[in-house]
Length: 276
Ligand code: NAD
Image (cartoon, helix red, strand yellow):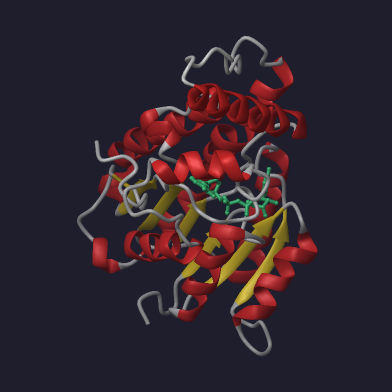
């Protein structure tokens, strides 16, 4: 039981990586707040934690909305009385369904052009065609969401004598994804924020680290076309996509005493995709 008697908040924990992390934390003895936009799905994660779901609390909040984050933390105070661990995991891959359709079409066109031997001509055009709303949504969910939750968590974790904050970034923030400039910028911003806050709160006993997963099989990556998935696989030396549990185990390491002298770092479970 690596997290016995700890209180953890995992944002976006109704699905994918967040869900796997919340379930692992509960198995390791933590009481886990499962946040999501989708309350019913968050409650399902809580129900999976134990016969009576007593080790979890589902809370609906949009992390990109300051007032909703403040209300969520007040609810956590009332229900659980504090916080030791925060995982800023809530995220989106594209701001509109249209973005994924274009991405899939262009990836397929580029692969076909490459196969034809005549050279790749189809541009990605992701930045040139980006709307203000798409850019704004992507930055708001990842960067504002991480800031709002971290700001509220620091005094609460301090009152408990210290703890751990984990920011779910991405390899996109390390290497840049050509078809997702807004996502890459948001994730790179989360890595910079991680480093700064780690320096700021180190003497309070709070460790702050980022995780930069490679391609992981979750509902977020489901809409990616088979051809684009093949392209991603071709760049991954281990020759397979990751499982959410393989990211959750990294979260447990960073949340627990196993990483007691680790702060301001990023860990990248990515099958060898990025080795920088
Ligand atoms: P997912 O879609 O399965 O889960 C994301 C969850 O976040 C969903 O339940 C969604 O409802 C919730 N969410 C979205 N916006 C929210 C908001 N504003 N407030 C609260 N909840 C919100 O996705 P996932 O693949 O598990 O992704 C989890 C995190 O991991 C994301 O930050 C993502 O960017 C990151 N990540 C994923 C991959 C991957 O390949 N799947 C790779 C690198 C990083």
